[in-house]
Length: 125
Image (tube, rainbow, N blue to C red; front, side, top):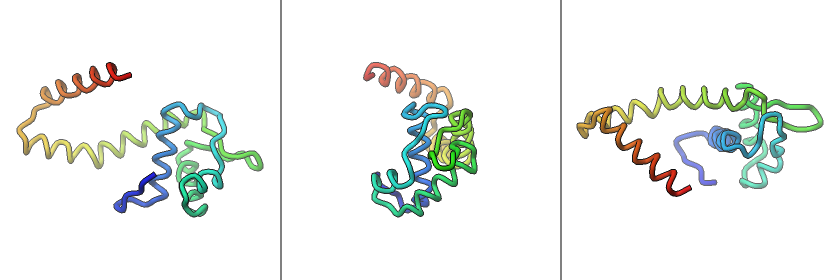
């Protein structure tokens, strides 16, 4: 995993874990890798991974079963979607809108590009 400087590493790890949950790598109530395992896989300090786990636990995406490990909360995937939507609307969508204005693109144009994207994506699956 390559980290970007503009965002805390623990948040980038939390994002990556959330993406893996949304992708179905770990289902609801399924155990996720331990802090040590994630730390070793990514080559980062376990304290950094612990911050990522705390971040996800605070948002009720994962839960800790003492002595057993961390598990995906039954509502975790829905909470991830809510969290990611909020971030997208707050941070990325304004940039998209500004770029659209600069390039003279309309929402209809965007809809057409999105449709092409979906068609191409389904062809490649």
